[in-house]
Length: 361
Image 1 (spheres, one colour):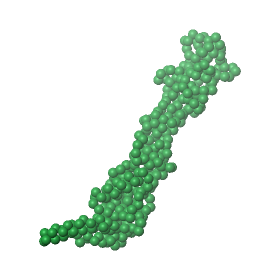
Image 2 (image 1 turned 135 degrees about the horizontal axis):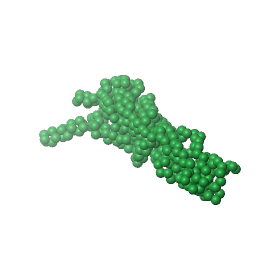
Image 3 (image 1 turned 30 degrees about the horizontal axis):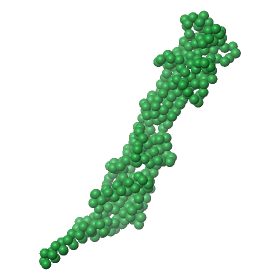
Image 4 (image 1 turned 180 degrees about the horizontal axis):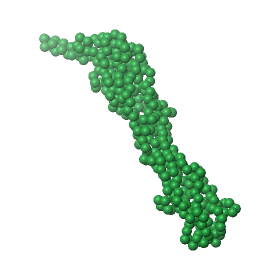
């Protein structure tokens, strides 16, 4: 009988010691979780220029909170408040307009744990510093993508303060994983009575949209006069070299944020040949037009009859999205007379025009 009493007493004592922490976790509380004033960071300049940004922030928990004396204090127990971020071990992707994907993660969160005293505690005593890391993606992520309406994303919370009194590290991590899973499916953080503060952050980003301009507006190329016999014999075609100059801007770290190309169009194309410009003036030379080519290949450029549709017109240059692109560049060109109808060849001026057009995608 003595053996039975000793064994029973041991079991009861052991069970009570295990249950004490589980019954009294809420050592530090608020009537309800309190939202701190959102932090703010404009990532536009940093992400567009360098493609990534890291900025240190600090929580700004307001007011105060209360902590009770843990019943197991005689055994060395303490009230514990943990600063946690779902993004120390998880990454989310913000999808801004223009299919701009920005990854978000958190490092350097400190302090991760505070042991407040019994009674009222100032919220400033548990404030934490952390670094938020952002990166503008060149690929489309396949999970944890949050679509942003407009140029301002709100992440709530980026950091939160929870009562972790009596919890093991494993229990704390498990709780955070469960909440993050809920967040990914609902894009809303679940509230609990052990949550004390939520610190959110607003991240602004406007994607740079690469644009180009033609630096030689109203450029005029004048070919030398040439006699009819030289044109007919092919001994000369009056070839004239010139350049087209361009300036492009709004890159992401010297990379084009969208595809850019340029082509020529004209209302004065030979009906049967879109490489030949002609003149429609009454006194114009007959049977002869003008052709253009890039000096790099000397192949007559195909031009479009429409400034809004490239068709099969030759691209003067072409850069794809996320390709390194020079901000300033020139294209050496040449122009020459081209006889398209020897029988109709007659003297006179050949005045014609072409329009340079940009295509963005």
